[in-house]
Amino acid sequence: MDIVCLGEVLIDMFPAEIGVKLTDVSAFRPKPGGAPANVAVAAARLGAHSAFIGKVGDDLFGHYLENVLKTEGVNTVGMRYDEEARTTMAIIAKPDENTSEFVFYRNPGADTRLKPEEIDLKLLQKTKCLHFGSLSLTHEPSRSATIEAVNLAHASGALISFDVNYRPSLWKNPYEASERAMTVVPKVDLLKVNEIELVMLGGSDDLEKAAKSLLQHGPDLIVVTLGPKGSFFQTADGSKFVKGFKVKTVDATGCGDAFIAGLLCQIVGGDNWRDNLSPEKLPTALRYANAVGALTSQYLGVIPALPTAERVNTFLNQIY
Image (cartoon, rainbow, N blue to C red):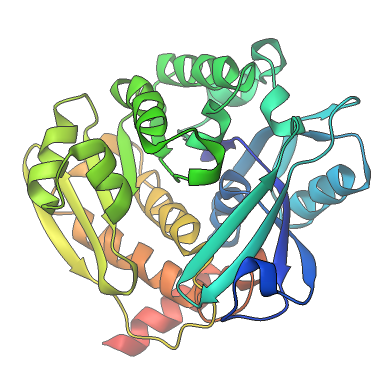
């Protein structure tokens, strides 16, 4: 297995219009979503063998979501069903094409009820990479399940990838979110943040200064996504800004998920993922990831917009 993604798979209720506030949206359309699930699908479309670990409600939406993942080629042996809690739902508004507002319906959501003993050990022992986000850290028992999965995958030599994916409505305040995220940062190899999360965790809006600060907590690689501008990486041996691609953006939702999937596919593609964390190789990997994110932004929704490897390669070949 190349990449195992752990966390939430849920129903995204996408707005019928872009450019209005949540309370002014006229209608919503259900779409499959959830950042780790998006990464699993994106990786599969890019040619990787991916799997998903998480929990959904034993309801129509839950079974629908598993079927979506299976149809996309994602291994779902790690999925679990909860008979007491419903599948989590996220209501989304798009004030503009690059901004999203989220309201999560979790009371509790089935994704927060994944237990440590429900983790699929075989998947974690065989994978090259485990990827997760902060939404599985908001509540127990999914918090303990996530940490257990990280420990198991790390013991097997897998790359541990963490996308902070900060969602304000799920936390009491930014301090709580930052504190919880920083408890797992020492356990990860790759930490991915956006500009807001960089300031939250790194204490500065200076890319290099904040990223170097975060390196001191244990990761080998800090990656900062900068939207249409591109991305930035920092390792102990060097750093670089990698320019983004100019495309007509329709919907930027999920572009960060597409980006990290592209990056992980590049990093774990060889025999030893550590060899691909050098400052010499990372610019090419980030350029590829930037392209995956840019192509995703050209269509509405996340999973329907995720590009195949062929489409990414064609796009990159046309650039030069």
